[in-house]
Length: 273
Image (cartoon, one colour):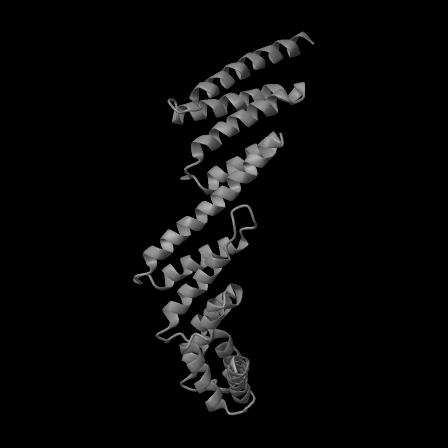
């Protein structure tokens, strides 16, 4: 008896699932634009985003110019976001913002285009193309909607993304340094200082620049040593001018002393030849 009841319950569940599926398929294949649109909105409100997306895709081209087109395109963009299809979400939100210029949803869509790119921004160790894209989109939002209550949020997110780019630049310079590619390290760190002058890593960056310059001098051919030791001294002086009491100051003074002594030695050597 229990087995019979269990089988009946299971059969009933299968029937209900099949009925739901067939109901969706009936709507999808109905060819009735009004029904498909109505059900697409219903599925969206029920947070069945994949079904809503499927139905919106069937109907959007058929409702161009209709009053419902604005909301349908807006909801369609959001289905991609809710399904974590962030690249497509960014595209469709931006397209909505550029198409429905007078829409009540335009500001939200412009923000979500930027925020979808923000969601695509990877770890600082990976390529930062999406990070840069998100920064540009947030900045565009601030320019278009300077009085929006979301301007502060955008600025905070821009700062967060720029910090990620800083970390990427620092990691690249540090990698060159660890690989003993000192000239590339100096160039990379100099670029970091130019692009991110307010970085919290500035003191360490200037320290590594001076140290890399010294090690580059040490490993240079004799003809280039004088010039490179002189550059090391300039880098050390620059550091000490800014961070005379910093945690790297003692080591930088030692590097400067060694560079000065080495330059004097090389000068004497060159004069004697």
